Image (cartoon, rainbow, N blue to C red; front, side, top):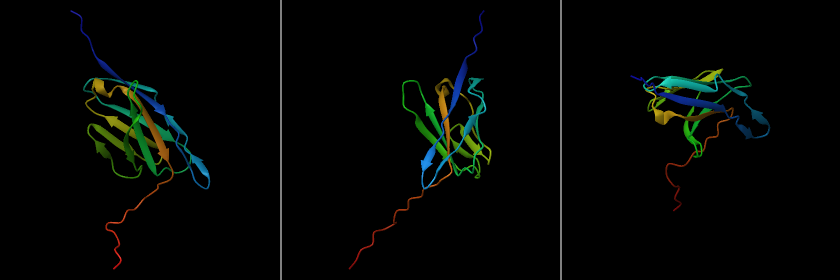
Amino acid sequence: MISCLTSALFQILVLSLCLKSNSVNCQKLTAAKTEEFTLEGGSVTLSCSYTKGSVDVLFWYRQYPGKPPEFLKSHSPFGDAEYLGRMTFEGNKEEMNMTISSAAMADSAVYYCAASSHIHLIFFPLSEYIEY
C-alpha cells in the first residue's frame, strides 16, 4: 500500500516599498526563508525582518500563479496581533510575521511582505457643510 502525504508550498518574496516625500526612505526587508512547507492542516509562519529606520505600517500580499498580487492586510508592528480568517499578523520593531493555521492547498502561493515608514491619513467629513 502506498501512503501519500500532501504538502502545501508557501513561497515568500521580499518587496521593498519606497514612498517618495521630501526624502526617499526605503526599508531593507529580508525573508527569514524563501520557501516554507507544511502538511495540510498544519500551520506555517512567514517572516520578514527589516533593519533600516522605523516602520509604521506592514503589508502582506498573496499571488496565485497567473494572477496579479492581492492585498491581504496592513498591520501596525506595535499593535496587538490581528486576524484575517486563518491568518494571524504580528510584528515588532525588527520583524513581521504572518501565520497561516489549518493550511490548505488553496494557501499555496507566493506571499509578499512590504513596509512603509510613512502613514498617510485621509479624513472625510461626516456631514456636508450647508450654507444658508
